[in-house]
Image (tube, rainbow over all chains, first blue to last red; front, side, top):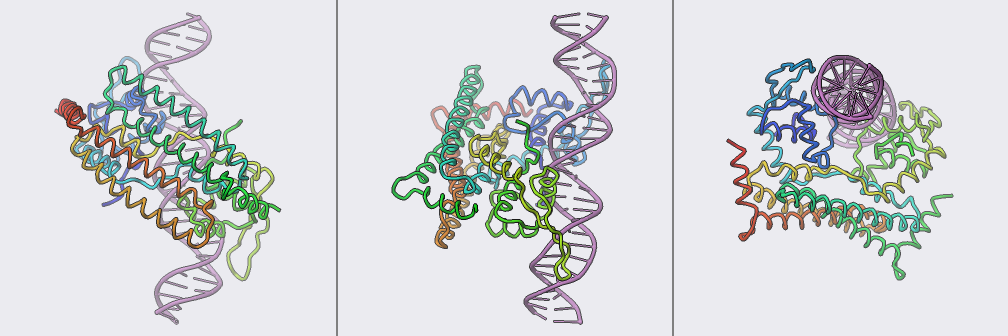
Length: 200
Length: 200
DNA sequence: TCTATCATGTAACCAGTTACATGATTTT
DNA sequence: AAAATCATGTAACTGGTTACATGATAGA
């Protein structure tokens, strides 16, 4: 199959909302913000117009009416097309089914962490643990607050997933600290030695 | 503190390698590839030159000699500056210490998964589990192979971390399938109902 | 009434990717 | 000697972000 004509994930959210009802870009923005989708999908005012434009040239949405109301600027309302629905469905399927190779910044940091000394690394990892638990608490609270408003947990699974990732991160970090500092065969001594050699 | 003048993580790797010895961009590329850094940091031939250029204008690296050897094209060798070393160190510290808010595609997918039917979603999630375990096996094998070559495990922590994330993903997905399909109070019936309402 | 904020869109800029160019070496 | 691959870099294009513009409403 050919690569997607529009790859930006913001386009997925746009298709999803337009599949419910036609809207104009600004309204899409408000809706995305109201539903806290910015937590899951990066977007800003400008990129919305860009993405909608891309979707239009790809034939996934069409400009419906472009009227002005009072003396507001033009508002162009877009509707999803059949091709757009197909793309939405297919794309979502793919994203759920096939785990993507991604580039979290902590992976990059770990791959270069040798450049820090073992003591410094451990100190930083300990601070990371604190931040991780703060973030976890925030998300936990967000979930509870939202559930209390009567929202079905189905609409919060992405936050559950975030918590799962944070927990895995924390567990990994704890383990890593152990492997560095273990008094028997921790990495610290050798690590320090390697570092001393390459820094003249 | 002001935002980083160069944000691309590839620049971090470049600074790290240049802190060992001056190199020209092509050599950096070879080195990155040899060390399998492409698994942790996205890069391609073109972006290397861009990033090195950015680092130069930011004053983190300087062009040293630009000679030609035989009749090869010009090769410009870059060296790290003191400011560059400081940036490398500070940036690495930050990346280890503070967990970034990121946008994995599965988070986006989960936030919109309601648009799929519960049965379809479960089927896809099951396939995801298979793929996750395949990926895990591949990484496991990579780690073992590399360790067998005598590489110190410190230089493989990022792969350990990937495995931790894959495991967390899989555990989450298994749990999610359970929450959807649970015969007592699984989400499937309500979910199907919601979906039917909004799709006329 | 002046100022802020909302509503809506466009344009300019910057970052990142893909494609192109060209001589050197190795393989067939 | 032709073809492939390595070595090295630049240029063109596309995607994404930031900044700008402008009328409308609400608050001080």
